[in-house]
Length: 295
Image 1 (tube, rainbow, N blue to C red):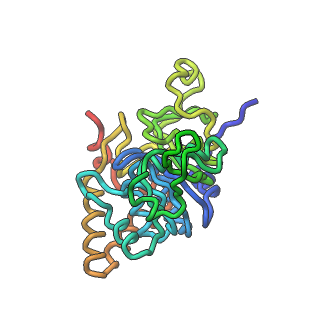
Image 2: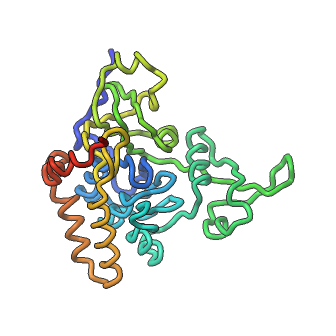
Image 3: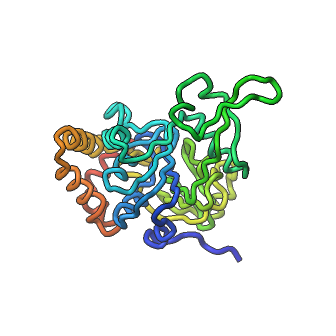
């Protein structure tokens, strides 16, 4: 008989350990697995290599501010109109506090595709003729054996675990996204995939319209209503712009003045102190959460 893949938040977090390569789904200010990310911060997981979505959001800045990140594989991290560049990401890159694996979106997805196909590398046209291969020695410009033209060799990007946020799933790991952005690429490349969802639906609902299934057989499903907050969850709620703007302002002032107390207090209050996802939602408050509904 099939076994349920639904785990409690803490049991799912047991799969994430110091030094792992973790890919994080979502895009900009939407659909990041914040219930799991807060758990990583709360547990003080260290020395992570983080693979972002095509464009990472302030979720990455939160992890950097909490001291969880050693290396970042990304094409960029920002908060849409609220921050052209995430301030924690900018400081970490400029200071060398975090190792940055330079790439553009196409290169990141090429590396994930190589991992999904079990290849040591794949080739990609993007990046040829730019300074990206000079900034990232892992990228090699080689000669196409068929045309003789230069082409970029991109090594496989192989996450130990992917953590994603989606609309819903059944108990057996069959997931539905509203959009999904690049989440499918993270799932295919990773050894294990944990998906937090807004709600659990029946397997009968999944089988009624199988074309809507975006991921088949995720390893772990976590119930997490409002689990993307402060980011949007398409067709459920919008991003909490006030929350994100507060973080951006605090991070900018902290790095500008060299005084990290306020940013550290923000991380402690919003991510470390709540014992679990439910306590976090209680602190945010029902009225504020309902104000984000898409109506």
